[in-house]
Amino acid sequence: MHYYQTVTEAVADLGDRGYKLNFNLSKAYLSCADQDMHLRPEEFHIDETYRFEGDTDPGDEMVVYAVSSESRGVKGILVNAYGPYSDEISADLVAKLKASQP
Image (cartoon, rainbow, N blue to C red; front, side):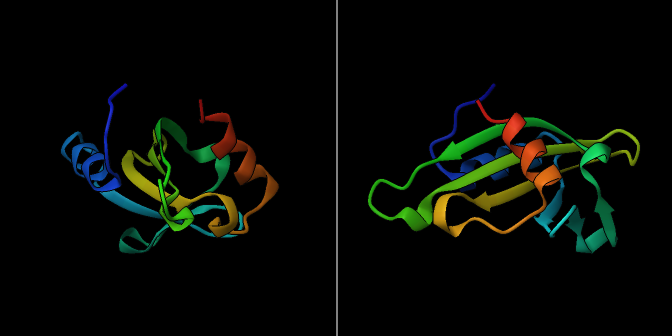
């Protein structure tokens, strides 16, 4: 596991380590617009998770996920807010993301 001081540092290093795609949360899956791809919770694995807490601004509270899909042969990054700024997603997707956090 690596240690990063900022989200930018984490994203840059993960990109250098092959996590090239940018994933976004949809209601029930991860999506990658560049690849026109959708991954349901059972189609991907969370390899690493990094949580960043905002010292003064709750809007700075973010989680960076290193995501891979063996069946699709892809690796990418999901950056998401947590707390009051997090996205509304399905229970299956919430369970998958929560299971990966320390």
